[in-house]
Length: 386
Ligand SMILES: *Cc1c(COP(=O)(O)O)cnc(C)c1O
Image (cartoon, rainbow, N blue to C red; front, side):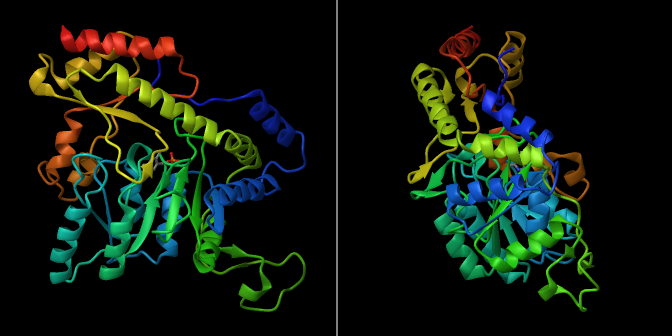
């Protein structure tokens, strides 16, 4: 089976992890700060905190922005459930904004329309989470302008997007947001096995997130309520978690960061090849919003079902049956039973639902050969023309 995504681990990556195993620190040593430094250099953001997943990153980002009971968080329905769940962790309510039919990202016009209604109802969101689906940035300049007008905070879910840019600035620099979140799960662009990070330019938010990452404990005398009892002393001043990244993971991250640009370049080469080879099939190819350079985590096609004699499901299963490990990103979150039990219904976000009936993620990964890519094209062409 040709997988839809796959990590690329070099000998240098392996050596970096082995070095940590033979060192004094398996956790809370020098590798995590080194990884954070690499993330800051790459993005240009002032603060970076590595954590054990993007899910944890989203959670502490919401907490640091003060999300709580009675507040609202909005995101896109076409995302992984974690982009929405983070609001529920904080006791807030979650709602969605339908997608743009070309980029499949949160629609700015739908966001604005929903904000106008929410303002009239005195029900504005505290946080909006735009997700850079497939690695392509949302229209952040416009979302940021709406944030100023309507007074909400922005967390960019850039789980797909490290290595990409928006208006010539790296994703993660937080020019148009309060906090940006990355994921380093093995299918994403670089990996630390499990792992994530939060980026921000706010010292205050960074300090809050550092507390939430590690039990709400501080060793900083300036933040303590009382005089230090001695050099062993620490204080818990808030309720936090253990969301720390290990040294093994961070060492892998440092090593992977050195190849980030190469990873994204190769993905672009593969995507361009797909664009050419799939050009005259009854499918819609990925659309590129002007001013964005995608991290290209995913290559998503949409079937033009009117021009195909098979159903979406039949095409999908035929691809898998013929060794092509396709996937579907994503089942719209509001269609999940857990969200349906909160009152969301089929029909709530029609463009997201229409996307779901047509989308297929084709295999794309760093070590993918031209032969493998040709095989994907050959099988897909055969299935669509049969
Ligand atoms: C993968 C992903 C997450 C969660 O990442 P983890 O590191 O697995 O917790 C969140 N949001 C999006 C959009 C993702 O793709």
